[in-house]
Length: 225
Image (tube, rainbow, N blue to C red; front, side):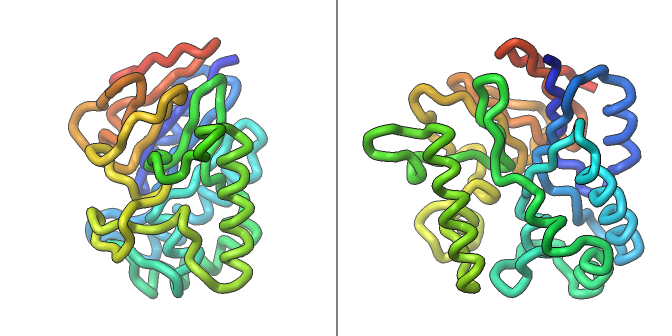
């Protein structure tokens, strides 16, 4: 099975569609951050929201949640750079609560852990480490916190990203603050750079859509575009 991994698009839906067309795949995984770019408008946000809604209905596509998506879902809990109330109104006129809930915090794919910014050591279980059961447990905790109108720990922004918390969650952790988790290989976006990066078997693909990942039979190939 060929898994196509596409990092942060930030409004570049035409490029994303061309990548989907040009690279044969069985399933595509987007790593989050569909919204927000420099000096973009509410009309652009509306168009991107319509694109997102279409992809959420495609069985061959999975969308992970990024920090630039989360603040339009739970804007009363957290905001980051790029947020405007005008764009929020445009996006929420298209995407419902149910649509946002379809976005994934993470995915285990062919032995790899995918998320927007990566799981840090703070989220490992003291005995079991980081497993699908452990990450599913964090998702369950997040749902309870959302029900209680509370920002879940998994979505915290740490002090390295202007937050008040001692560590960042899976939509906020910067690549240079990530520490290797034994036995887990991760693929993330979030931290932009001109070139994709690899460290101890983990990969950051956020290059402004100048690369994609192709994951097949447990092996990752990063393709420069």
